[in-house]
Length: 181
Image 1 (cartoon, helix red, strand yellow):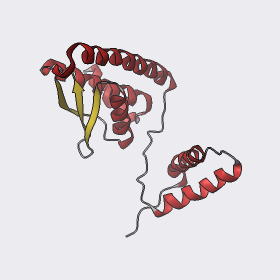
Image 2 (spheres, one colour):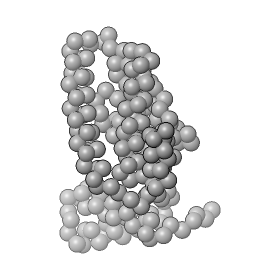
Image 3 (spheres, helix red, strand yellow):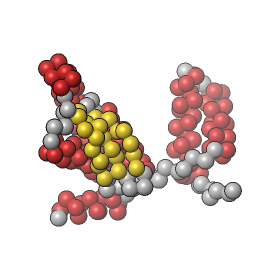
């Protein structure tokens, strides 16, 4: 079975990341260790099939900074909400698993959306349907359809922020048309 060759330009971010991880694992960023890590990275990338991460070719720093600040604010607010629910309601808290269909079919954006959602206390990604780009989110304190709709909106807002930061031009255009409609 032969696979399509991946260009060095596409594979370079993966190789650099593998070398950084190698150095971090060994706690040794000496030139010799990093060179050996690069050799290991090339061998791993050639022997094992790793699907290429399709980058949109754009990264908007002006959108990334406010997004990061908003994320931190959500983490703090959700931490206090979970603390309150645990202390005040205990085991009486109702939760639900909600399907959230995403706009993007990019593995990178689906993964980033799932990770950011899971890092906010009170929510957890329990399943990802890659074929339909649907995240199944376990949300705490989801008592009714309105709470479910709010959780779905929060996840889609996270995805929209990521599209504005690093989505393709086509995804950004579709998002702008959706928001403008």
